[in-house]
Image 1 (cartoon, rainbow, N blue to C red):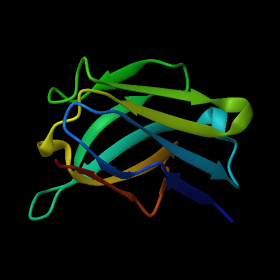
Image 2 (image 1 turned 60 degrees about the vertical axis):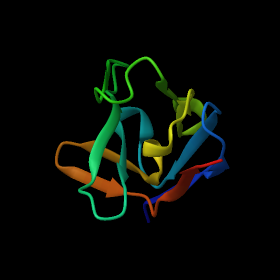
Image 3 (image 1 turned 180 degrees about the vertical axis):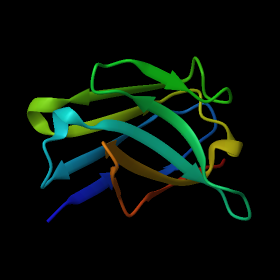
Image 4 (image 1 turned 30 degrees about the vertical axis):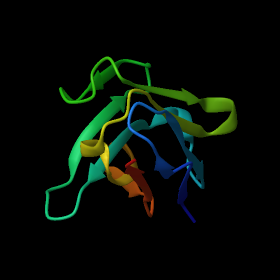
Length: 115
């Protein structure tokens, strides 16, 4: 059974930082690309960051220079380090992994940026 469990969300003030984690089980994690998406109320889900199995990375324009995606294959866990957070970063953040047509999503974790 495949499971992706996100954690690390919460309430943070503008300018603050958070690190999200996505713990995977039931898959050969190192084969999979890892993606972080987010969805704010009333908006479409958008890609925030992606890391391939070869550690190539790509970021959405709104987060470039502020967010960093990483992975630890030994721990089968992916991370999203978020810095200089803004109120517009408020959303539910989802982890997704994909490989050769196999796609799995986590349940999401809420990030709220507010003073």
